[in-house]
Length: 93
Image (tube, rainbow, N blue to C red; front, side):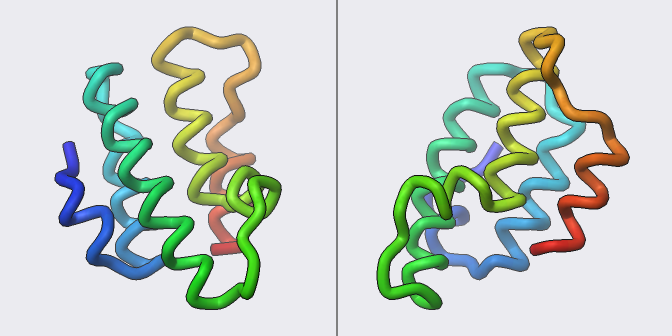
């Protein structure tokens, strides 16, 4: 999936692109590892724009929501979001 360097040396647009790329993944372990790295990078990116980045800001960010939705789909969660919901959410990135 993604290396730590890839996740931490990129801006929000690159993180969003990585998020779209992972939507076709099927390896749960690789997705979980990449998710952790992307969330670290997302927090760093948000800190550039916000004085304080709390869990709610990070948790509600569209990039986070897309990753969680992917994880939900990989484990056959009944709460997984629909594709149209995710596309609407992507407009907020």
